[in-house]
Amino acid sequence: MHNQAEGLLKDQPKVISVASGKGGVGKTIIAVNLAIVLAQRGERVLLFDADAGFANAEILMGVTPRNTLKDFLQKRVNLESIIFQTPYQVDLISTGMDVDDLITFNLQDKSDLYHNLQRVASKYHFVLFDFPPGFNEELEKFYGSSDHLIMVTASEPTSLVNAYTFVKLMTVKGVDPDGFHIVMNMVKDMREGRKVMERFVSVITRFAGIPITSTHLIRYESLIKDSVNKQTPFVAVKKISQPALAIYGIADVVTKKQTIKKMSFIDKVKALFGVG
Ligand SMILES: Nc1ncnc2c1ncn2[C@@H]1O[C@H](COP(=O)(O)OP(=O)(O)OP(=O)(O)O)[C@@H](O)[C@H]1O
Ligand SMILES: [Mg+2]
Image (cartoon, rainbow, N blue to C red; front, side, top):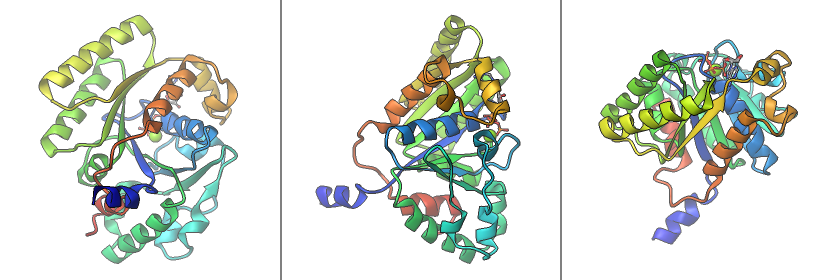
């Protein structure tokens, strides 16, 4: 029975969610560059830009998808035609709206979406979701059913407090992804950053009881600002830099072979869109 289940789930894509308590901490930068590194390693990757925020994935990659999820939901096009092939071997779906807006679509629309998404996603090894900041009912379901939840925080106190609240909410709401990773971004002093991370992890372990799979530090570097301005992701520009090495580290952890998954892809998508 075990083997049968394993066989059934073997070809399922792994779902990676990139989230944060506070906005502007580097989620999109990390999602885009991680997606590219995974693709560089031969993985088939779909990046789902579920954040209609300012510096979204398409801007960072310098591409303009013709259609978005909104076009699909308004029944103008099929799901395949909104998948945009970026020059980085990463396929991209832009929502053109916030995940919250999905609530306004009816159950039939959502049901259509997850059936279509299931078909489309089966072609990929990884589906990465770049979410808007925060924690709400829609997002929480999806965080919990991810294979990997990457929580991004900056190293300054306000961001850390938000990150702590995020983790506390995970405990309260019973959000339990298979892998939980903490990325501290925009670290100006790496030695100090490592200490801050150590303290943060010990607080989480003591008071929130969420097991942490891995931790990563990304230095504050002008290379990242430049890559945003040039609309070219930094892993595609300079392969050896601290931020690139950090992304390789995240890619190493998420590509590790894992034990059997708790949920099938269809269940994860159902959970996200609140059907079934
Ligand atoms: N390590 C870094 N070094 C320097 N600048 C950085 C770094 N990380 C992020 N930034 C800057 O912060 C900006 C915000 O990053 P990003 O858009 O990825 O954040 P976000 O968490 O996705 O924001 P939102 O919550 O609005 O979606 C980037 O445009 C970039 O200029
Ligand atoms: Mg973003």
